Length: 198
Image (cartoon, helix red, strand yellow):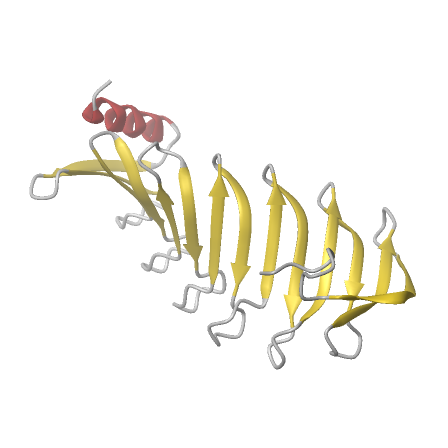
């Protein structure tokens, strides 16, 4: 199927799903654009841009305010490579995500706008596996969460901001925690297996 056929198929599937869709070809760039107006206000809320049948990026206005707040980028193979998002809808893209085989592999968030990621979450085959929370003042990791089936199963904490995890908390099914001081504190800089070099 040629690129026009792909976009026509997408257009038709969008129309069948009840979203107002439009597509057009930009002759000067060779790009095909497919757009959806999800809330039927006459403004495209989602735009897919591609060249020669391959998507390049998708731009989405999730809160319908007229500004894109989620952008997804694609490899030439059609696989998702990364995304960036404005998750508090303030006009600043603070979240960056990377993908492997169309599945999230890492999400990094700069929640205070200082240019340093203070929340970092890793995924294994698209499933949350661990995350770190950094102290914005020191840049040190103060928490490491391990996940099982979407819930936090264990947390390591640096309770005195000295660069080592000194408290381990285990969580039950209801997320009630049992915490114990670690007999041997573990470095949170990634050198001893509990931290990450991120």
